[in-house]
Image 1 (cartoon, one colour):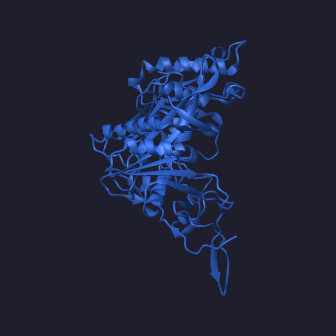
Image 2 (cartoon, rainbow, N blue to C red):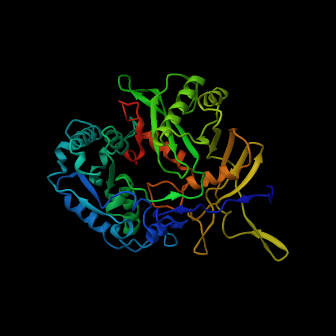
Image 3 (tube, rainbow, N blue to C red):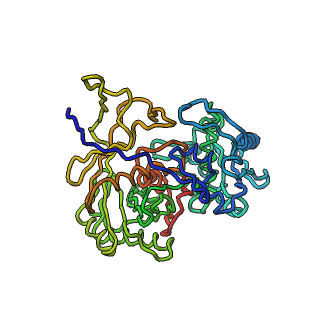
Length: 467
């Protein structure tokens, strides 16, 4: 054990809310309640139109869920963090409307579970057919809600084939450009803390309907962030994973503007575990497409700084390929973010003549340089909420991320600040932060979903279809 007195701490990143009010807050839920969502006055979203696919006879359950979204709910859990939910109209300045039964699709149990067919195959075929039918009506709704009762759980997964119904639904709907909200009975309808459910559901519906709840305030607006991930896709003829799909997520400097591209790579040099390493030419193609995606959304403008995150190391060919694709006037940084490390840190405080461990963990945002191109960053840890100590995880000693730099130079403060900010940009839940930056947190979601997309179209996708 060694004592490191020279660590530094990144302040908790601030979020920007309603664009014209200049509302700033570190707490996402408090910011939404105080100022309203960022895009409130930027885009007209007076209502969120929700259509549904549901088991026959359960339409009233969805009606009640929508009514709950317009009501007030007190926190029953995470009381140090959760804010009172005052209703989606008051907080998000919009309302949710459930489409009439004639616009929705009710599924009969005998169709969802046919005799002689594996439950997961029968249920997924029935839901897939309903999604494709709803695609013909997608101008009539913003989000498609799919209700899954626990009595249908035999069809939710199959361990032998690694089938997951949630991933199947997202993949099927994404190919139709339909944003979906999967509603599970156990986690949404019967979950005890209705306040928690309403926060998560309202944020998700708002984003999937095209809204922006918050942005980051602290990052350089001329920077862009790319998250690289890979998925092994199945050959439908051989039932073996034979295709490596490259996913490149592109974020603006404020952590928003996410789109991603995915395509089957032609040149894989090696594979370590589930991490493939690209040839120089393949990396050049991937980075070129990523830069084109950014420029398409910014009227041809290029970023002055481009930061690439991935979980595996960068090989020399990948480094060379990245520099081949990026013009010399763009500062390129290649960062590996390692989640599993053996490091732990304990904060000591002065007490009289002695030092003793603090009752709370090391501050979130603490970072410590351990080598010329290596730093430890604690994205989990103690923060102050309304002047009180708050540790989201509740217990255990948090371990840091290991950040290794394969290209780029200079101090670590700006990179650590960016990663800290991007841990607050996951719009798929109501938490204060994630452990991983959103560049990599979304990577797992994309990889698991894309495995199910047997007809991958080489085009940019909006992430809202995969949330």
